[in-house]
Length: 88
Image (cartoon, rainbow, N blue to C red; front, side, top):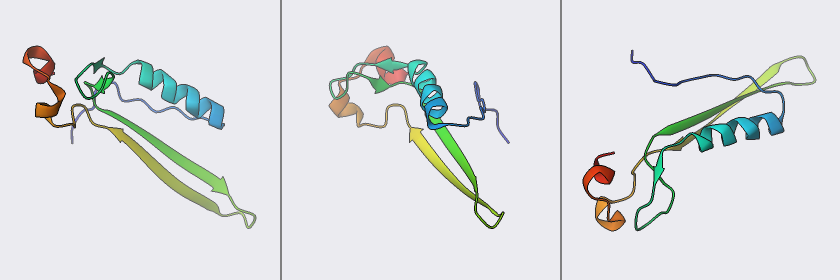
């Protein structure tokens, strides 16, 4: 088992609440410019959406969507990243 820093879980009840939560996470990302991308991720981000719906027969249907942004996943040679930017 391992510890994930800054992990949180937030129940939402509407699409709008979900979008607001995603925007809050997006704003707290660490980013830095590279030759390939002006907003290149410098931190990993995982956004999991668990959906539950009650069907007409009283059963519950569940689904899960995982959105993952991996920091620095582009090829280093193409980014032009050097020094501290390359290490982060």
